[in-house]
Image (cartoon, rainbow, N blue to C red; front, side, top):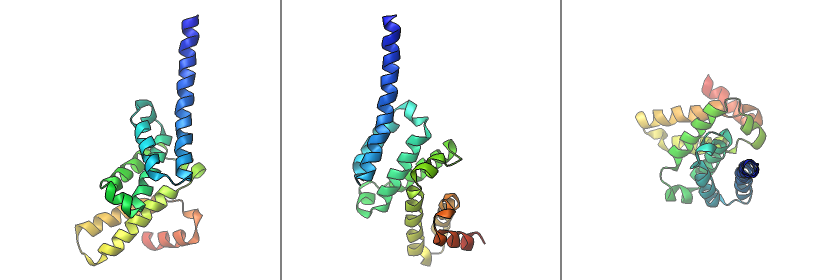
Length: 162
């Protein structure tokens, strides 16, 4: 009987610890400590149980997009754009209804869109495969952004989808 209660207590304690990690990441994000958030989400994403949760991929994509937005941090982590893109795609597989985006915000999608848009503008004088690939990626984020957030975004999507 003691063994049963000790195992049950351990399971409950582990669940509380995982839930507190999301709170810690949220707190770090609110304080603007993006690099510390990255360290925490990387620790958390290494756990196989956390990899099966959409919330892990939501936070990973949001944090990686914030790093990608910052030029100094982007130079420090050269593969961050691809890692953020992969995290967004994994999140979309796990939560196609956008429940977490509706609850916690779509800043990560806007950050990725903004970075891609500026890259497309910079490379707009280049004809070729690179520009086409960037436009395809840009349209991916445009399609998944919540359009109702701002009139400007609604106007941009109507221009691109025509």
